[in-house]
Length: 190
Image (tube, rainbow, N blue to C red; front, side, top):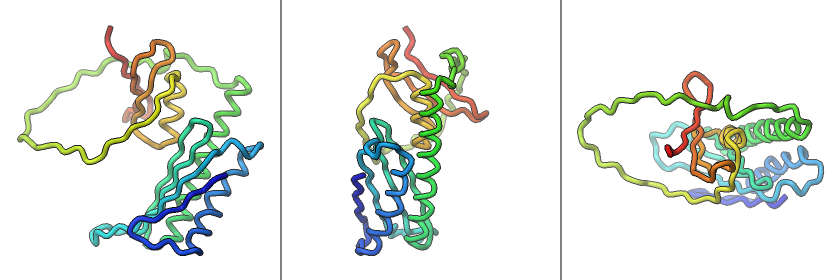
């Protein structure tokens, strides 16, 4: 596995780089062939804002055959942050592999009807005008996938929503986690 370790607002020592490399490389044991994990990027960050209680942040992004896993942890000590991030990443890889193996064995049987969502009415309340700023822009490849695959990807990234291209219709759709623990699917109206 190709592991890249870089730092932001911190000088990455050889010992720190080796420690992060060893911790992240442990996840490759979950893949039989060793080629499944193409690369991993680790970023070690020192937050300069004194109001942040846990300024040492370790963030890892793992690219596995088109799937992206992310883990981010913060603490007072960089080594502790790396440990926590590594544990979180390992849990995500185990969950990913478990679902992947279940799918291979045909044990996951779900239908699109399970993700069907009744539209919920929403009310837009008038508030004081607040100027919204776009502070970050992301671009990513959107391969066509089913709603179930999108939910899996969302869970692996530990996000609350996931934008994807529907394999059935070719439209841009969004899956999201509802407060009750279920999932919702947003499709464009025809």
